Every structure is written in structure tokens, then in C-alpha cells.
Length: 355
Image (tube, rainbow, N blue to C red; front, side):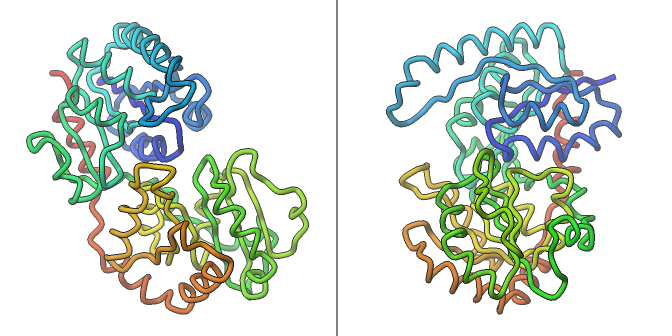
């Protein structure tokens, strides 16, 4: 029986594509193990699926000054040692990495034992972790055709992003009951990312009284970012993070407001949900979300409101405009040629594994 190690973590976007692959890998008879951080979001998500999970030390390698810059390299070195030990013990036929800093020790450890590695880059331009890993990889999968210019020509393949198939079969009535909403008012779903976005959360809560005049609001606000003072507000349902009911909530949503992480927006477009993207500011990131958002805007899938332009007035105007023109966005997304990413990646895994 073939054995695959999956890795990736830090945010849900570095985990959910791996989760999307797991049912098909199981159908093909693979033994699956997962290596992630000791306390990242990936630990709970993977353990809930009853997949063997192994935690290693990990540290973030930053392009900017932070006091942790002095200690994190030692955590990475410790993680490489732990990952090497696991690679020897597990002896997988192939490693599939979804990125995030926990993946760096795993990929480097796999290379040291001559285990083939496939990495996947969701964003328009590779993140630092994947940049470090690319020389060790046999194949580099990417989401956007534009990304090919930033990757080694002989390794790069456009596959798209694996989408969790269970998201396609949500129950709208179940979501109405779950949220305590009525059926006669449209629903806005707000997604700030698995870690939550203070900027998006504050902006939504700042216009909530006005927004609730025309819409009901589902707010996925991130870990430790609930506002207890809003618990009893009619037409407003807030959650830290939703797993089991997520498909139902998507089915209920008429429009979506989201950050512009590549995995999130690919799921939203696969579901043909009209969306307003508020990308993470270039001041607080490498600007990848802005590139992702502009690409989707150009294809007619999304509206974009950058943080620097975010005001109560611009947010309300954008949401209303999005809802009024929702059929145009739905048509554009339904006419797009979505790649069967799961099948494409599975065939690459089978080609790549040790003989």
C-alpha cells in the first residue's frame, strides 16, 4: 500500500486543499499521515478526520523585524531534526505540501531522504515558505496561469486548487434553522479568514445597524473575535470558525464578503457566490491578496474594495451594488472553465511517487 505524507498549516488556507484531497487518496488506497505544528489550526482539522497526526516545531521566517526573528530559526532547525526522524519512521512514497512555515522542515527532510515532494502554491506569487521549498520539489502545482512566470519551467504545472466537494451540497433550510433567520430577507456571509480579520470585523460591525435594514448577516469572525454584545441581535449570527455547517451556510448566502486568500476565493467562485473582496493591505503583507483579488475582478467574478478605501459609506455602497448586480457575477463564474484540480493533482502524485 502506498504511503503519502501531507503537510501544511498556520491558516486554514494551508490545510483545506489537503482536506479536499483526502477522500480521493483514501479511495485510491493510500495510507495517509499528516505532519503539522504542535498547536496550529491544522491539528484539530486533521485529527477530526481521524488521520494520524504528527506535530513538529516550527517558526516563521519573516521579511521584517520581529523579536521572534532571533528564536524562530532555532525552532525551524529543531523542526527539521524532528521531521527527519519522522521521515525515517514513516518512510512515505511521496510528500504533498500545501505550504505555510511548518512545511519547510518536512520538505527539506523529505529531500534529504530522496523522497519525492510535490508542493502547491495557491497565490499569484509564491510565499516565502514555498520559495524555500521549490528547489527540493519534484513538481510545483499552482493556481493561476500568471504564477508560471515565477516558477521553474520544468517543474511548474497549473492545476487549480482542490475544492472540498462537501461544500457543493449544502442545505439552505438547515442553515436558516441553524442561524435563526427568516426566508424573506437576503443573506450576506462575511469571511475574515480562519484567524479572523480585525479590519473586516470592525468594518462590518460598524455598519451593522444599517446593513441589517436590508440583509441578514452571517459573520465568521475568527478565533477569539466574537462580540458578546451582539449575541442577541436579530438577523445577525456570528461564529469563530465553522466546519460541519459551512456548506449549509454557503448555500444560504446570497452574497459573500471575504478576504482574498486564494483558497477562500476559489471555493467562493466554485460555488458561484457573488463576492466583495477586501484584500489584506500591502502594508501588512507581500500584496498577494491584492493580486488574487484583481485577477478575479478582471475575470468578472468579484468586486474589490481595498483596505485603504474602506469606509462605512464605501462598504454599504459596495454590498448593495454587489447584490443588485449579483446575476452578472453568477453568470461569469458559471461560464468559467474550472479545472478538475483533484484529479489533476492525484495523477501527478501517482506519477511522482517512489517506484
